[in-house]
Length: 518
Ligand code: AMP
Ligand code: ZN
Image (tube, rainbow, N blue to C red; front, side, top):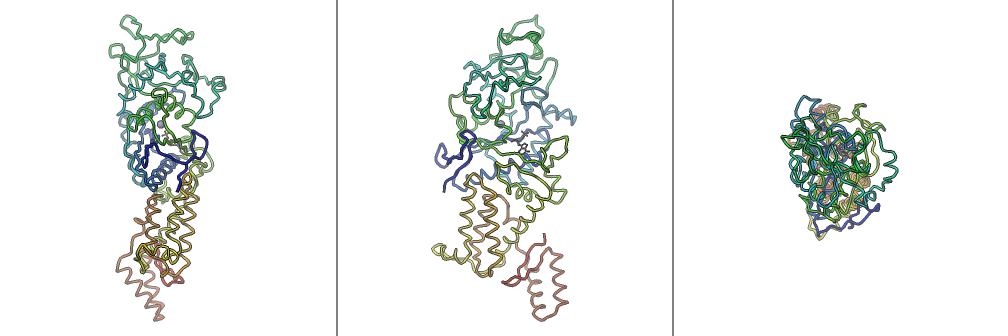
């Protein structure tokens, strides 16, 4: 079976070939932990969870880093504005460290509730400051950096393929540069590797800028240090240093968001990755910058495959704070939807198409999952089971092609994570189950299919379709006897008793089948 992914780097759907046989190094851009994640964020992480599961189903050992951005992600992509973490701290009257810790833990807790496979490395940007400074150092030594009042920047004009990944028209971008464009920057697309704490400010999160990373200091009588920003960068009126704070304590600063990902990816996974993932919003800036600084530092390809998820809208509208439509998993839970209902909703769309969240769509996903759990519960109600493996082909005919369904499911996912097709294959198999005599279903084949579904889609069907107790089974037998004896009132009493236990009896062509009420 070939595994294929749509690769943003090539623009094609490419066969997947890993650098080392049966091993995959994978980096997923993680959340900025200044607030609760909304359904859009979670959709992204559910899709990348499917990627990990599909790689495992193809016998790859996955070594994966998911970062947690706990510093340096500024409100604007143009390296301007407040750090989201410091902003969150002001909002909540806490320190940025406390905010990061709180929302970071909430992210891990909810990842577990969603059944997301835990990455081999969950890396916080603040734990990788030395590695980030080292990357700045390498870039400085190689001549890719320059310093202005508010930080150390990457000169994108020195990286000739800068525009290629996102097919950027740099001239048009430069021409349309917005007001907030920092006039000290050499090129519009240049980005901060390391920002200095603004003069007179004290940030919760700041680190000493090593002396060797700074341009020559111009001593100013022991007062505020100013910097030699290079003649050609100084534009009129901006060369009075607004920059680094506090001469006695040295120059404090913090990393740029893009730098974090490159430094963590390369220090944990090596200079070249197999796969890097993120949202489509990352293509023109964040990932373009990651590629530029990583490849400038190493002269090697940073990642061979780049996968991007499209965005989820809510009621056809972009998710935004001001609209209050960024539902959290807790919001869904309050309305009666579990994390698995939400996972099913996400899988109904392909990761590269724009999704639309509505409560109607979520209800449809919930119902589908409910029906699937009842199909899964059939394994407790069928008897002819074990067989030896030599008879698989024969058995598969008898078991309405359940083994073939497992394979078809993995094949659908191997084709660029085709989750909607995979769900349809499962729907068809379960509807075949509903239309045969129970005796013709092999429990082993059904269990194998359920295991494949759980492994590849993480829907936890087996865990959420438990057998009923012996007492409940006794009630079902008593009810059947009452019906045989045409004792309808007793039969009704027993039916109601079963209902209170969350079980309903459905009379099918193979006799009575029990199902969960909800
Ligand atoms: P952030 O915390 O803003 O860095 O976002 C975390 C992740 O969620 C990033 O990978 C984004 O690409 C992704 N993301 C943000 N909004 C959406 C959305 N509406 N739909 C899907 N993914 C999103
Ligand atoms: Zn990133």
